[in-house]
Image 1 (cartoon, rainbow, N blue to C red):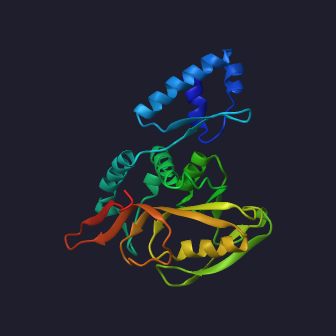
Image 2 (tube, rainbow, N blue to C red):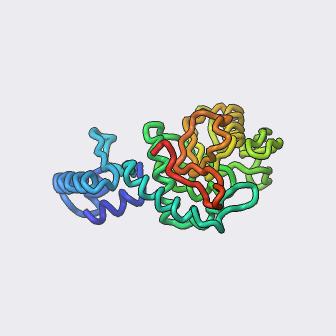
Image 3 (cartoon, helix red, strand yellow):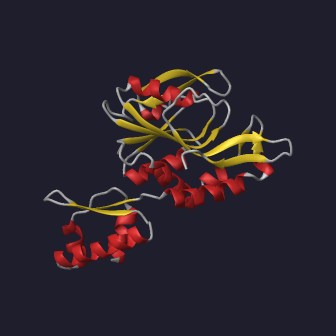
Length: 261
């Protein structure tokens, strides 16, 4: 059971045939099935995710890292406590979060938490903007066992032909550009966009325009932190984990779990 759990946890959403474990462990198929049943019960009891068995010749077993809202909220509360440190406030009204999102434990749990909101979507690729959103997007992509692609603000010759679009930044209201290699996303792909920060929503709006050029569909947008102002964003289909309300008259940083939790 430990060996099977190790492989399932290490490759979320990947379908393993029962024959894989039969051969690996030199055990009978009935024994493997029975042990998976015990494992499923343990995962459900301790809310570790879901061990799902699919019947048929093309079936098998896979692990879905579904985190309950209570567990996600505990994680978010912990992060909010750390984000209230006054030294994290940056010029322009941003928060310093790189040390947290680059910590493997936080990156994994946050990426899986964001992925959980879009579990029924089952994207073909996870997109993010370079560079701060990469750790979260990579862990969200891992949760779905799909590629992660980083959108750049400039073309790189090593990535071949690329598509660029201009967009209006929701925070600075300036015109910027984003670029993605032609090979990164195939036509008809379902896309999930993950980022670390959302203010006006200009970047996310630009992603919709960029994916239109690729004939791909943005099925969801997930962000770690959104600002409470402006309340009206340039997009309306997104989820966030933390709301940032700026600084009050006492110099306290106002962060709290988002309304999605």
